[in-house]
Amino acid sequence: GAVVSQHPSWVICKSGTSVKIECRSLDFQATTMFWYRQFPKQSLMLMATSNEGSKATYEQGVEKDKFLINHASLTLSTLTVTSAHPEDSSFYICSARDAESLATYEQYFGPGTRLTVT
Amino acid sequence: SQKIEQNSEALNIQEGKTATLTCNYTNYSPAYLQWYRQDPGRGPVFLLLIRENEKEKRKERLKVTFDTTLKQSLFHITASQPADSATYLCALPPSGSARQLTFGSGTQLTVLP
Image (tube, rainbow over all chains, first blue to last red; front, side, top):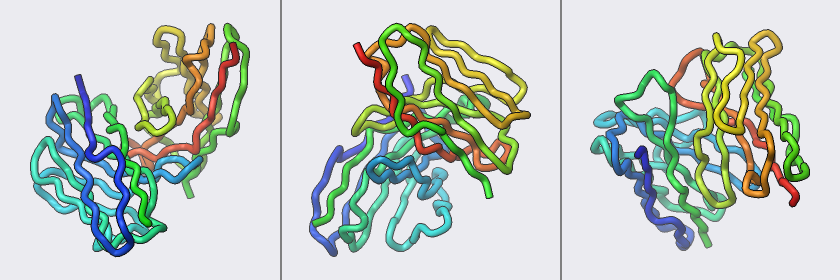
């Protein structure tokens, strides 16, 4: 149980275009999903927290107009990187919290999406 | 400001030995601490959670300790195997019992056969 999927697993796009990454909780309902970015040899940096049906909360320094997050249902959140630039190339990872196990603090992570902007 | 440090960027040990990884934090008092495993090109996988009122937690060959006085957690893998080779991350809520996590930079463990 507690499986999180991401699609696509990798994507290459041209500078200036937009890319959408999907994050799905497959066997549980996630009221909260998190988006992280990870550069090579570095740790995960939280970009934003999204709650189903409401606007995402972005971390300091993350441009909300560039990284659009939509959490339209209890099983799906999307991250759209708008007008991508080569410096946006990174490994994007989502995670979800099980709405029925809030006391455990456990997060379930997706397998990540490798974005390369040329 | 809050800071999380994993004191070894890389750790090599011989198969069968115990690996000990360290996570130190400063400037706050988290209600819990978690350890994750991350393989190259993959998302982190949850291993263990330990709460502030727990001194030690075990799961199979894994043991985690949490010393809130020293502001330190130790992560042990006993009878290590080459399959244990991965990057191990500690994670804490950025404040109190917040739902989101802040991650340490990780320790890359290599278990040599």
